[in-house]
Amino acid sequence: MKLEGTYTIHAPRDTVWEHLLNPESLAKSLPGCEKLEPDGDGCYRAEMKVGIAAVKGSYHGRVEILDAVPPEHFRMKVEGQGTGGFLKGEGTFTLVAGDTGTLIGYSGEAQVGGVIANVGQRLVLAAARQIVNQFFQAFSKQFI
Image (cartoon, rainbow, N blue to C red; front, side, top):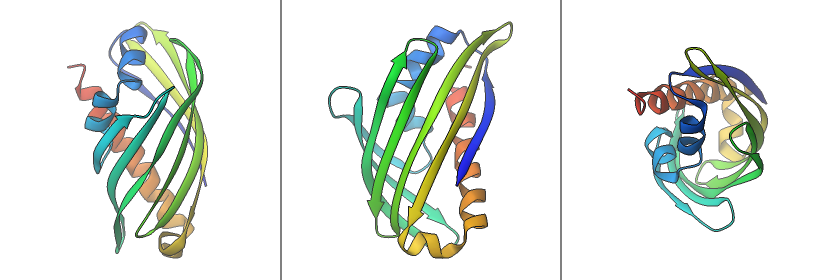
């Protein structure tokens, strides 16, 4: 499953960069996130409750920040497993300064398996897009 898009945050690029790499800011923005703690060297341990259609569950995993070039771009690797199956994904985030704020471009791919994969690819993709949108809406509210 491939996800890509852009979102504008009305704040300076340096500030947006700092918040994107701040576990407290991320935890406030990630739908269903119950815990996000640093685990050394650009890694975080995460605990989330997520539901797609009738498949709901608790998940734990690891988020790793790689190839960071402040405040321009970084790569994120995510692995998680839980009651509904597993998720593996990797994506790139690019921050571009603009007149009205910062344009965040994102592109990545993810794989799901287990019970959650039985929901159907189209439904999983729609749910993933909704989660990304909810993340950016919550994230942008931190700059108001």
